Each structure stands twice: as structure tokens, then as C-alpha cells.
Picture 1 (cartoon, helix red, strand yellow):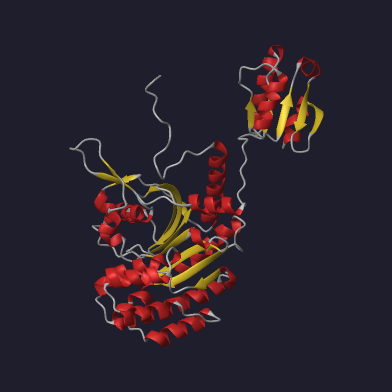
Picture 2: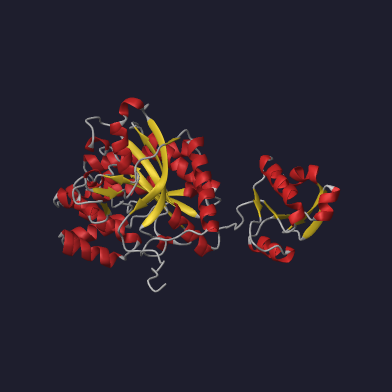
Length: 440
């Protein structure tokens, strides 16, 4: 055909090969298991929402969403850019059917029209866990505990660091440095870029776009580089340095309470740190904020982030419901693990492959395949057009099946099969009745 269409995907979007998909699904299953162990229940929401639901009228988000419409007369819709805003709408819509505090998790795709780069795509999977309707800092501590448990489950607890701050502390910069509080969101978005830009670039943005003077910018830098031997000492330094007002002092006290809760939950201090430069650029955060980075690849940015959002549900309802949660970016995490050589992929979708090269044994081969599947053993049957045993073995080798089962006329006559252990490179004759037990 002369009019063939180029099969490449759009920029920032990817196809997923079977081995990649299987690894992602296995990781999501393990993460969901941790969420459920902590008492969180699964929910789902539509991929498409009304634009005003997603943006709340905030132009900063308005630029990054994908719009959707079938005809000009249809209601305008947009693809969700995260799972937190849809959660707030969901809670407002179903409040009468929910029990509060409401503990939920949600695993699904989101879309953002951002510039693609290493580990960052325009379509990706998020694994979210949230608590809605709990004001206590114990809820924030539970979220940190879930984050730590997830990375422990994935064998990464010693390779990540959970960085914690509080937006109330940073919101106090306006009072202390005497700039218009309406500029605070722009200040926080600039600070949030420190993981991707050097201080000079951030300082330039604070000067050129936000309009802060040199003295104000220097004071912000002095605050952001505070260091101490313990988190308690860091909070003491922060309080003494900037002499914060009531809002910032509240944020510092919340962090002090969070530290006590984390210690009581036996979350090792080596797993987390206070970092007052963590701002989170999203405007709906009101208190504690979290970011988790891989120690060996800080350039990848956060692979798990979130925080407290006490006003988000009120966009959609008169109810005042506090919320706190975190989100794990599966695709960015896998990309980082690939670079570190820590990811594991298995090509084979099944534990055993049954070859099918002898027409006289077809019925026995089909019956054997069904027996194995009924025994709970994932089994693939060769369905190709090549009746050559050598060619079918080559198929099994390429598919990386752990075990290969061979039945020819001789095996059929004696009620046995040849079982090849592909990793051990051994072959043994096994009676049909014993085969399921051997494979298990």
C-alpha cells in the first residue's frame, strides 16, 4: 500500500511491550497490597472531567491539560492531570455513601501536556493513597508510613529518602519579608524548581517574574539552606531565623508533632528528613508536603509526592473535609530503576509452555494443557504453524518460559512427558499424574 500510516506514537506517549506491562502490573499489585494492608479501599473515577473541575479556574493548570470534545456542540471535557482533584469531586458527590475518615487508594492513568524528558511522560500511571476527613497529624504520619512500607515492599527503602516540609511555614515568608501574599504561589512555584534548576535560575525568576528585591531573595536563600544535626534543631533554627508569624509557627508545631508520630510508628529517621525547601508547586496544598527521591538519581525528581489539602473538597461542596495523601509515579520510578539496573522483567506470561508438534498427540496435548491450567499453573500452548520440534523449542527459548513440556507419540503411549527445566538446563521424564505437583 502506498498510503500506509506511520505507526509511531505521539511525543510523550509510549507503547508497552508484554515484559514491560507485566513488570508494571506486578509492581502495581504489590503497591495495592500495601495500601490494603493499611486499610485503604480502592475507587475509580472517569478519565475525563469537566475542565472547571480540574483547573478550579487556575490558569497554571489550564495550560497543562488535554481537552476533549467530539463536536463543537458537546460539553467541553478534559483528561485528568492527577487523581487528587477527581477525588475531591468524588467525595463531594458521594459523601452520603462514604464513611469518614475515608481511606481510599486509586491506581490509574493521568495526562499532562508537559515537555517530555527522562522519566517524565505525557501519559503515565499514578498510584494514589489518601485520607479524607482527618485533621490530626497522625493522618499525615500514616501517609509517610505507607510511603515507607511501599518502598520497603519494593526493596528500595535504603535507596530513597522521603523529604518533608510544611506549606504553612513557607506561606509565612510573605509576612516576614513584607511582600504581597498574592505572590506566594509564584514564590512557591519558583522554589519548587530547585530540584531541576540551580539557585541562580530560581533567584532570577523570583526577581524578574515575582518582583522580589535582592534582600528578600537573599533571606529566602538563607532560610532554604538551613542545616542541623536533628530535625528538631532544624525547626528551632527556622523559627529563630525568620521569627515567623502565627501561620508559620503553626506549621513548625505541626512538623514537631509529625516527628513524634513517625517515631512512635517506628519509621526510621534514616528513611526521611525535614527539608524546608520542599514546596510542591500545586496550589491546593495547605500543610504538610512530601517528596521522595532516589538517592542515586536526584535528577529524576520526585518518584512519590503529595501533602495535605484542607480546602480542596470545598471547591465542590460546603463540607469542610481535610485531606492528606501521596502519589507514586510508576513510570518515572521504573525509568529510574532501569537506569540503576535494578528493574526485573520476565518475558514469559506463563510458567510452562506445552509444545504441539505431533498431530497424533493433539488431543492429549490439549487435555494436558487444560489439566495444568485447572491446577492453577499458567500454561501457554504453542499455536504457530511450524510442526518442527526444534522450531517450537526455539519459540519457547525466546519466550523465556521456565519450563517446557514435550509430548510425542512415545510419551503419549507411556503416559509421561518430557519436562525441560530451562534455567537448570535439565530434562526429565515425568508421569502425567505427577506433572502438576512437579511444576508447583
